[in-house]
Length: 52
Image 1 (cartoon, rainbow, N blue to C red):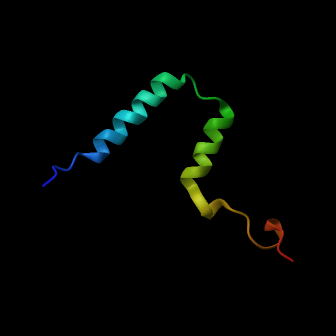
Image 2: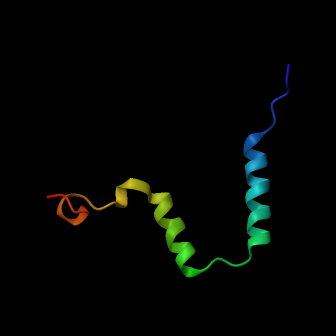
Protein backbone atom coordinates (compact mmCIF):
# COMPACT_ATOMS: atom_id res chain seq x y z
CA UNK A 1 0.00 0.00 0.00
CA UNK A 2 1.10 3.53 -0.72
CA UNK A 3 1.28 5.95 2.11
CA UNK A 4 -0.75 9.05 1.29
CA UNK A 5 1.03 12.36 1.58
CA UNK A 6 -0.50 15.34 3.27
CA UNK A 7 -1.59 17.17 0.13
CA UNK A 8 -2.81 20.33 1.90
CA UNK A 9 0.64 20.70 3.44
CA UNK A 10 2.28 20.27 0.04
CA UNK A 11 -0.04 22.84 -1.51
CA UNK A 12 0.74 25.33 1.25
CA UNK A 13 4.47 24.75 0.82
CA UNK A 14 4.31 25.21 -2.98
CA UNK A 15 2.19 28.35 -2.57
CA UNK A 16 4.64 29.86 -0.09
CA UNK A 17 7.59 29.04 -2.35
CA UNK A 18 5.84 30.50 -5.41
CA UNK A 19 5.08 33.72 -3.57
CA UNK A 20 8.67 33.94 -2.34
CA UNK A 21 10.12 33.36 -5.81
CA UNK A 22 7.54 35.40 -7.70
CA UNK A 23 8.26 38.71 -6.07
CA UNK A 24 5.67 41.36 -5.40
CA UNK A 25 2.09 41.23 -6.64
CA UNK A 26 0.83 44.04 -8.85
CA UNK A 27 -2.47 45.83 -8.22
CA UNK A 28 -3.96 44.20 -11.33
CA UNK A 29 -2.98 40.72 -10.11
CA UNK A 30 -4.47 41.50 -6.70
CA UNK A 31 -7.81 42.53 -8.30
CA UNK A 32 -7.84 39.40 -10.46
CA UNK A 33 -7.25 37.11 -7.48
CA UNK A 34 -10.00 38.85 -5.47
CA UNK A 35 -12.42 38.34 -8.37
CA UNK A 36 -11.34 34.70 -8.78
CA UNK A 37 -12.17 34.01 -5.12
CA UNK A 38 -15.68 35.45 -5.52
CA UNK A 39 -16.34 33.37 -8.62
CA UNK A 40 -19.51 33.35 -10.69
CA UNK A 41 -21.56 35.37 -8.22
CA UNK A 42 -19.82 38.52 -9.51
CA UNK A 43 -20.48 37.74 -13.19
CA UNK A 44 -22.94 40.08 -14.91
CA UNK A 45 -26.25 38.61 -16.02
CA UNK A 46 -28.99 39.59 -18.43
CA UNK A 47 -28.48 42.70 -20.54
CA UNK A 48 -25.11 43.46 -18.94
CA UNK A 49 -23.80 40.07 -20.03
CA UNK A 50 -24.79 40.71 -23.63
CA UNK A 51 -27.85 38.44 -23.77
CA UNK A 52 -30.51 39.63 -26.18
